[in-house]
Image (cartoon, rainbow over all chains, first blue to last red):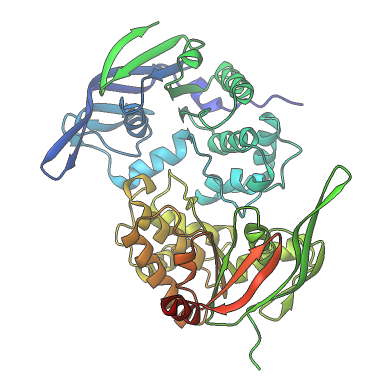
Length: 241
Length: 236
């Protein structure tokens, strides 16, 4: 099987894929202000594999949502894939442009797989590409082979195991040749053996040059990643390089 | 006589586990007319979802026939079946299955993308208006459960199916959202859709026109009218 290099684009871009400076996010619930993130300074460099480690409620998902431009900060600066998303208290990138930035540069993986039950594996993988007005079934097949599911192309989610569904979700996240892969508790719904094989797949994708940010509360998993950022109560706790 | 939206005749779905044959469905027959809302109740493992998969052309019966809107779908070639399903059937699930990175309106556009249809945005917005969702540019994580299910219903409706299959559609919703979703279903029913709701929740089933109970892949109490059922309960 030919090993697919999934990040041709990212290999040509030098420097940082994402930078956050003084990043903060406040949610308002009635009169109450909830500081989900405060003063986050982080940068994610080309080729890096990063872990954001913290307990539930630490702000991991909020951070990933900001990095993935699924949400906008209330303070601080954020640059993703060379585009200034926010600068100080101003959001610089309009909603439509944020959608485009997300679609073209970022792959997401979640604890739940979010596969569409009525579609086959290969249709689920193709979906973001079709949404962007493109079609490349051959690449969807290639990616499914890459994640070890060449024999499951026309199976629907209900016919697959949790680990297989997460592999389909990974292939789907890669279909737009992203520069940055954001994985939010990607192994939270699978057994430890499947967790290990999915982590190995992440390792291989990173070896190919894909920048990965993996958020987890699993300390054992974090122990396998070189660059770990500790998040607690919305603040950076400590880091190790 | 009006052609039924769904007609299942002696439907069996059997699996082989070693030397044992498991009958997930064992000779199920039912009819759903246009404008009818049928509730299927039963315990976990009774065959409810297996039946929904047969009715939705997501699986093929081992024996028996499924007819949808006058078309015999049993034995239809896979490619034809996929096209038929996309044209005639809408699905709603307990877990919504929205794509988290796409906005509400983009999620509703998805079925039209696969069907390669035009006027996608306009039609998606119409479908969202139909289900009463205003935050059309919100991402799923910015919506509550009831609104996420509204998006999922709009997605199921956008290609104007005649049969709507819902698997525990209010299972994750609080009471107010549940009522709102059932109101939407009743509106669709009035427009002539055939609706099948599978649930383990008897109070939800009570809101349908007719309830059947499944046990071990068979209908154990067929065709009870839910209004009659309620009045009988109140007489007890």
